[in-house]
Amino acid sequence: MSTGAGTGTTAGTTSAADDARIRALRSRVYGPDATQVDIAALAEALAAVAPPSPPALDEAVESARQPAAAPAAPAAPAAPAPPQPATALAVLRRVPPRLVVGMVAVAALGALAGAGTAAVAAGTGSADPRAVPSFSATIDVPAPAGVLARPARSGDHPTALVGPDLVNGSFRRLAAYPAAGVTLWAARDRFGQTCLVVADTYYRTACADAATVAKDGLVIGWSGGPGYPASTTESYTALWRAGRLTAGRSAP
Amino acid sequence: MTALRLPRLPQVGPRVVTAAVLLLVAALAAVLGGLAVRALTVPRPPASVAALPVLRTVAGDVFARRQTATDRRDAPRGGDFVAGSVRRLAVMPNVPAVLSAARNAGGDVCLVAAVKQGRQYSADCVPPAVFARRGVSLQWSMSGWSAGEPFVEQGYLPRFFTVVWGPDGHIRYLTHIVGEG
Image 1: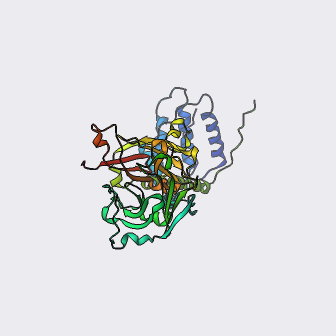
Image 2 (image 1 turned 120 degrees about the horizontal axis):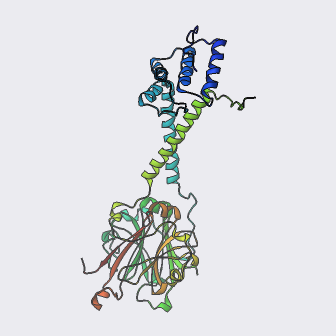
Image 3 (image 1 turned 180 degrees about the vertical axis):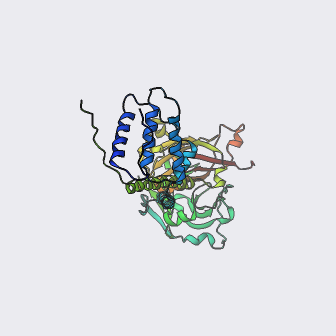
């Protein structure tokens, strides 16, 4: 059983007698017959030799001392009590301000690093130049990127009916491709994209935003349009990139 | 009777604990920061495109699944498409145009609209990076009898189609028939 609070000990200093007494108390506490009183005695002895602590810690020691005043508890080992909010706050108050500042700074730097990595990964596209589609170019004419900005001329109106998603007045003639029976046009659609239009009676259109067109160009493939006999159908490809328009029959 | 003695664990200094805690905080913050940016930069179609009706949603990488006989039936004939890459995406409403995804010999991702079992087609092709960021779109016009129209004359009216296969996997479309709407 406990012998009560240690005597002849000044708080903050530890003598050989204190050490021996604490060892003995510990062996009792961790033994099979430990009681609440033993635990309280050990807490008291430890508190007696502990360095001076702020009031918050004193409260914790005081709360640990409480069971000693109670009558002998059942012999079962004490289960660890859940931390009280006041105790948790007291522990938090003991965190040095420098550590708090350090944690905030490290968290900010970590968040920035993670955000930067994710942003770079999201914006990373293939830096390789786009492979040229396989076709033998029979049409090869200059087609500057600013062609849509020039004023419309008399021949800038396709004979094909233009659907509501293409801006009728934006058509600019790039080249005729008589062997394929089509004319190639630059145009804008109502989504603000730049388009390459292949038109006869009907049309087919590849569109992309201006930045994509400037970097990767536009590629459109097609075969003979509606009304053409299937036996005469040929496959064609047109590429508008880097200020040039090329078109020809697709490689089989 | 000898007491059982457990081996002593090496003492961990407070500096090591502090460094470990700081590292943990930095790692957690990095993960959270990365997730936040990822959520903000996820590719989305422009509002004008997002307003179009959705024809179908393609989940994941369409080229990852096995090619089937249905994929091959309306595959574009001709062109420099990789034959084994063609995957059927959808059929346009009311007209027999079949939408497929394909890769061309240059490695581009193509959106193909084909009729007559692929003998006639139109295709817009973009590099994979552009496809991942902005998707691919195709517009075309055509005429032809449509089983969806009550009168034959209506089936022969010219039609205009816009299809956008967005980076979010949605295939959106718009159909306009001359003289209607």
